Image (cartoon, rainbow, N blue to C red; front, top):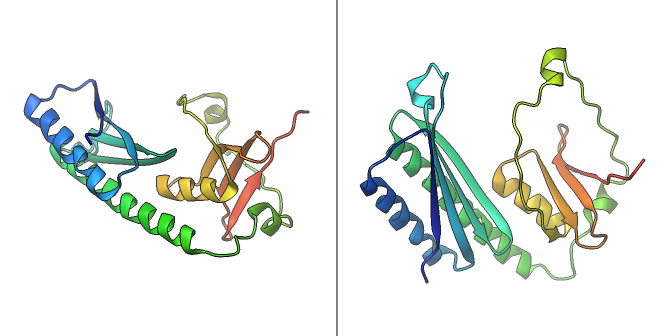
Amino acid sequence: MTIPVSIELQHVKVAKRLLDYIERKLSKLDHFLPDIESAAVELSLRAGVRSLSERKVAQVTVRARGKLLRAEETSDVLRTAVDRAIEKIHRQVEHYKGKHTARRSVRGGLPRISAIMAAAPEIEIEIDDEAAADEIMRRKSFKISLMSEFEAVDQMLLLGHTFFVFLHADTSRVNVVYRRKGGGYGLLLPELA
């Protein structure tokens, strides 16, 4: 089975040889994880960056049965950034396979995160720079899926983020899991005011 690979270029021109290389490298991922549905690569050039090693950016996103694996790398050579990002994806695939296999072997179920964190204190967000607080620096749209709290935590860890927005499988409402500074995870349950 061949994985559909989409490549988007932003402010950068690349040789067809590099595009073929990327498709060839990503098409091999299905040997490690057959659940992969698609892969997307974004190659870009950051303007206004002083360091040459951070100027060329390769971001790879792999969708596998409702899970997202994402890696971003920078370098002064685009092919190096691509290789590093794909290597990160390989490590994430191995991590995902290990978690997925371990999850199947657990008997008797796992405790619910909401029960574990019932006594978790509320968080406060402080913003020091008032000018930055008024300005939206980036907008990003994304798809959210129905999933359990444990699946959301797994997805957050796979992405390497400190929070993750998802639709709760039991309530069909938007929830957010986050990594707490003191350790463990939190679950935000938004309600209409």
